[in-house]
Image: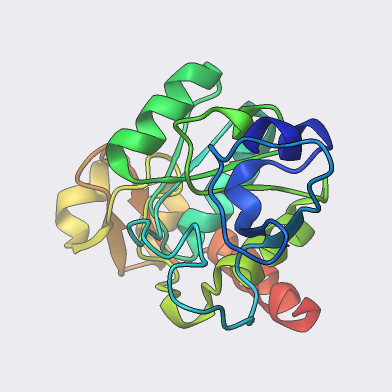
Length: 213
């Protein structure tokens, strides 16, 4: 069943219920000549009877892993506070393995990647534009109530923490050292953040995102 569904372009992580003809079946169900198959998407508001959903038993996750095509989206998700793993040299097999090992949702523009058998949760991004991609992910996985904006490092996804100015003063540009007093640092990569012009641009980005929703 899995092969037949994916042959027409539907990646299995986006499937929730399969009926043949009205009885629920799984991805390993053998497809027979003359079968009438109904396939229903994941993450809809439909209430299915118990044991119909293929995704109901999967572990819940709000962690992501992204492939080379959507690196900017990884940074945007970190901006909202989500643990988003990304490297521009990940092979498809590495993504599949990490997704399984760390219980991560795969986000990609490569529909073939989502056909890996070991990937259970994932989403094929329809848009090629960052703001629209982020809106897709927020809506599909219902992330809105879980935002923790400006809580993660955009470079490495670590949790940033407040840090005294005296501890980071040697890392600051001259004008920043003079005009700013509130700072945050990532314990993982030691990157320092403050509420400068970049912070204002990120706020504008979030505002545009809210208007789009």
